Length: 106
Image: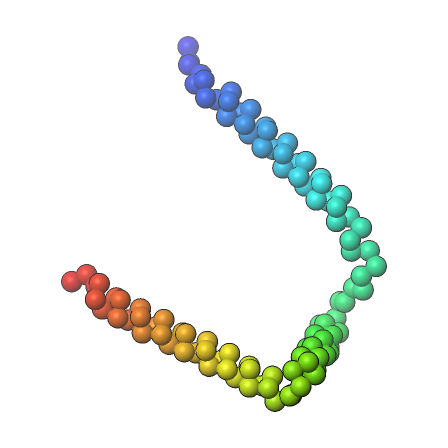
């Protein structure tokens, strides 16, 4: 006669509880967002997507430049951010080289 572990019924009950919780959660999610996509324009062609993206970027850059007051300041801010990212990557590389050279297995 095979012995059934007392953990098996508990495991099955827990498995059913998790399954029903997932079903309830997915049902609530579906109900919440069922009507969310109605009325949104559907863009199917890649050119339209690229065009809309470029237009949004130009408008955003223009608005930022107007708020700042100097259109060149936006370019300088971008260059400054690129500089900081480059310096950060370089320092991470140098730290890694130093760390691994000190802690290498010989």
